[in-house]
Image (cartoon, rainbow, N blue to C red):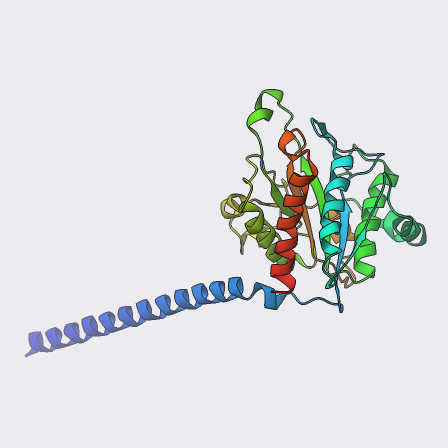
Length: 308
């Protein structure tokens, strides 16, 4: 009798364990399905999630560098010259669509009078950002204090004037001459210190998807040495690189120094992305037709995000 009771108890325990295990599998599977569904939902609803702040979609277009900083140099010439050419192609397309409104941080060799005026009127705040120290790090050594503050001025001008997007245009550089002939491609940069990081990531993803229709992803994509761990809680490093997206705290997108400066006070922000449109030594990008094709892909991405 005693052995029989033990057998019954043992059987009941086994049955309970089987039921619990089965329920656990169902719950886990259900959670995974929910996560996958949510991911698909987020991917499909990207355009619904990003609504313009204004009647028209306001974009600050920043042709990277100027005649003072120049940027990289290659077969196509100086970077600041090429970024302005690319920006002019993009604005030419936007001129045909009255749903967009844009402002160029510069339409010549140097930054616009509006940026210079903003810099003058907000100099103390911008200087405070510049002088912020973190881990004894200093700003980029290849920029003067004035040039660095100019970049902070562009970014904060976009914030204070309620732009929907700050789009910075650049060209990449391959320092090794023996690799230049085989090196081509684009990538998109987002800052982890931008207050609109998630929106910026959505925009970067869409630009990358559109660009991939015609262009390769750059084989040389840099990531910052210091990136907040919270980023990797939601994004996979290798997957981002495969999609041509880099995480870097750059001044015009929002850097760690400004983040530290604004820590004690709520600060609104502007979604910001930087497009490294190609390599400055890639002769195929030298003509207006090639630049217009790049601009068209960026424009299509903007329509996908804000309109379609």
